[in-house]
Amino acid sequence: MSSSQSWNQRLINSGTLGLTNPEEIKRVRLSNLIALTVFTTGTPFAAIFFYFATKLSGVVLIFYILSFWSVIELNKRYRFKLARFVMVLLLNAAVIHYSIWYGKGAGLHMMLIPFFCVPFLIYSKRDGWWMFVGSLISSAGFLMIDFIPFQPIIQLSIRSESFIYHGITAMAWLWLIFEMVYLTDQNYIAVKNLISQRKGQTEAIIRSQELERNRIARDLHDSIGQLLSAAKVNLEQLSGRHDETIQNSINLIDQSVEEMRNVAFHLMPNTLESYGLLPALEELVDRINGFSSFDLAFHTHGFVSNQIGKDLQYNIYRIVQEALNNVLKHAEANEVCLQLIEVEQRLMIIIEDDGKGFAYNLLKREGRGLQNIAARVEWMDGKFTVDSGKTIGTTLIIEVPFRKLNEMQ
Image 1 (cartoon, rainbow, N blue to C red):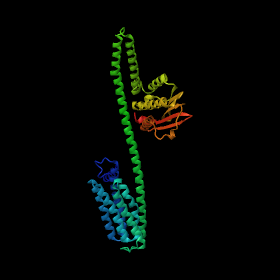
Image 2 (spheres, helix red, strand yellow):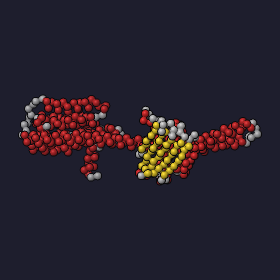
Image 3 (cartoon, one colour):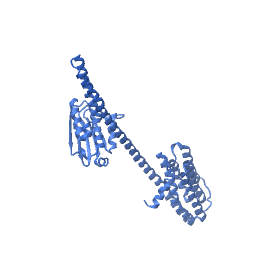
Image 4 (tube, rainbow, N blue to C red):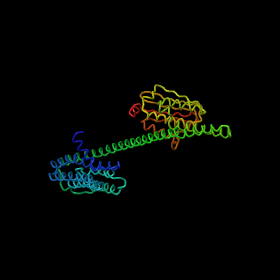
């Protein structure tokens, strides 16, 4: 960054140190930017007035321009509302003053049109009164100069009046364009920051969920599992005394151990942690085929799971797990197919079933399962589509760019 750019950035960021509200930071930076724009665009007009109007008007305009430095100084002292009011007052006062000085034929009052929009940019919704006063000054000044006949203090020559008029008209258009470009840019930045913030929150939630699942799964295996095993051994040593009661107790413990293993598996499959995504998905498919009423097929095409990081493998596994749980709960399907395909630098996850389907487009809100899938897909910069109908079953398609997968390793 050059020294001039660095100086400009320091001016624009004056007063933002210590602020945490993004909207307030944006308004402070904008007021500084407008003051800086007045410095750079007002100086040539001071020269135009000096040479084509009167020397006095050029000198007075220089004083107006220098007074905008007070806006930046007030922002540095965190006097934000006062800085904004001073800026609105100076902008309108300078234009109205020179319009009365030279008359409406010079077109100076045209600058009041873009200045009407300035209060809406630099004030928050809570400052509605200040917004109203600022825009009222601009609109009242424009209407007064344009519709009320008056004799200008200084009568310019036709050539000077024409030169100033066209210069001011061009400047008014530049201001309008500046405001539109700035708003568009700020909207883009705001949306980008919001997406980034949501992804950061999603990533933090996903990481904490996986850590907590891992901890609970270990606790189930290492503590509760060992206690149940010890209880079973003790009961087996009592064989011969009340055999039926003891056997029933042993059976209940066996069921508890099996249920605990299922819970631990769903929380954090040991295969996923030790061997990776594809073996873990194969194990998940085998388990579901072992108790479900449908046939679940699993196919991969060109995808190798060890080319992506562990966090991404966990995330993809949870997406598939959630989708298959939805099929188990709602689809009433006979055939289900899970595919992981690598195509054109993208990973595609396709889950199809021939179940009863649902009118996805008519859903007022997505269920928790679909919301979880959508959040995880968004975190990976992926695309998530659902094609479903009451006679065609449901197809869920997820696309994730390998570029993003590689970045997140």
